[in-house]
Each structure stands twice: as structure tokens, then as C-alpha cells.
Image (cartoon, rainbow, N blue to C red; front, side, top):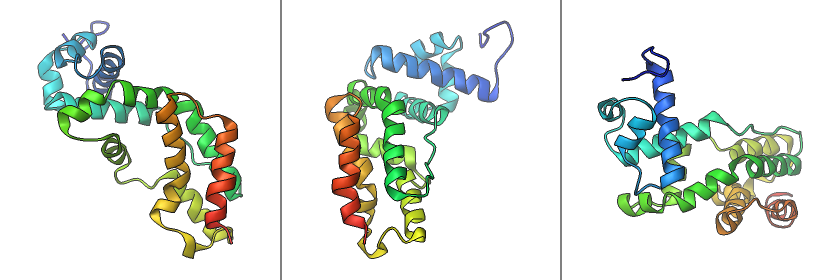
Length: 194
């Protein structure tokens, strides 16, 4: 049954098809109506193929979300200036993650209820073991002498992304460019620069 053109899919090709099918089901039907059976049908495979990889629906959905994020990674800007790097990062997220953020709010509320987790737990799961783009940008700015390292805390480093994310999640729309610039120029830079 695991065919698309008569050939059996294996490894990354099969997993990619399964995760794409899971994401499509999630965005079309929502978490509550998503079933491993409908994902298997959409991927033209069987439920045992899914269960061998993901023991439950919540694990499959988390894997599908990770797959979607990894398929279109955010590049960490390196313009040589802190302000320009942070603005470029937020603009890039604005262009490429608005749909994903809307799906996180609209389609995953049932996941949070069913698993007792939150959107922050999901964000932490996706970022596990990776440095954030802001950490990298800030580290380079410290090396260039643009930032006073004594003013840095984990919360301050996350601040531009957190404020941006708040705007995005509250409006389910792209954050206006004027707001991106305001977050950086009037809130973040005064906190961290000498």
C-alpha cells in the first residue's frame, strides 16, 4: 500500500510524505478531527506504518510541525550591525511564519487541551538543543562591542522575538514593519546598548 507510483517509499521519502499528510490534515481539519487513519489514507499507506514512527496523534503532530519548520529554515542575518540583524530577522519571520503562527493558534488548541501543554511548550520542543537566532545575533554584537554584556539576561535576549510573537499571535497577521522597527529601536536597543 505504501506507493505513489507503484514503488515502495522508504526512509526519508516515506517519512516526509507522512509528515506532509499529517500537516495537511491538521491545517484542514484541526487537531481534534485529525486521525492516524486519515493521515495514512492521505499518505497512501497504512496505520501501522504511522504507529511504528509515532505512538500517538500528539507525537505525530509535533513531528509534522518540526518538519514544516525545518523545511523552510530561518537564516540568521549577519549584516555587521545589531540593529540591522534584528530587524532583518523579524522581517524574515514575518514573511515566512505568519501562516504557521495562525495554524498554531487556530488548529492546535485541542492539542494543548488534550496534552496539558501550551504554545510555549511547543516552541521549546521545536527549539530543543538549538541556539536561537537572537542568541547568535547578540553574541556577534557583544564580540563587536555593540552590546554591554552586563545588560543581558535570557529574557532580554528573547525580548524582540517575544514581542514580535505576541503581536503575531494576537492579530494572526503579519506584524507591520513600523512595529518591527519600534520593537528594535525603542524597546530592545535601549536595553542592551551602552
